[in-house]
Image 1 (cartoon, rainbow, N blue to C red):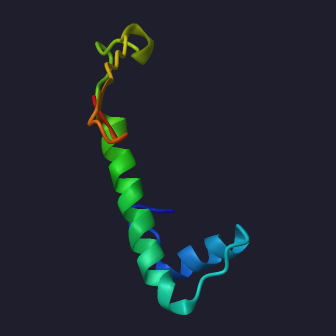
Image 2: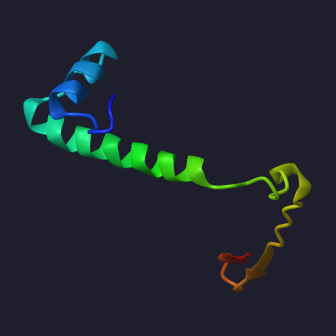
Length: 78
């Protein structure tokens, strides 16, 4: 794919090659979606994560408190 993006015909051909035949009215929407995804990924690739610690350095803690309403219903607050 060049910088011009994926054309509807290329989207149809690629989908068919992957075993996902598309109706002709879907070609343009699929190409637009794929081009958007590619642009988001390109933006993410430009970000500098050099000073960002790896995800394994964070500790995720979730506190769940259940409150019984007296009628058997349970509400959870996170």
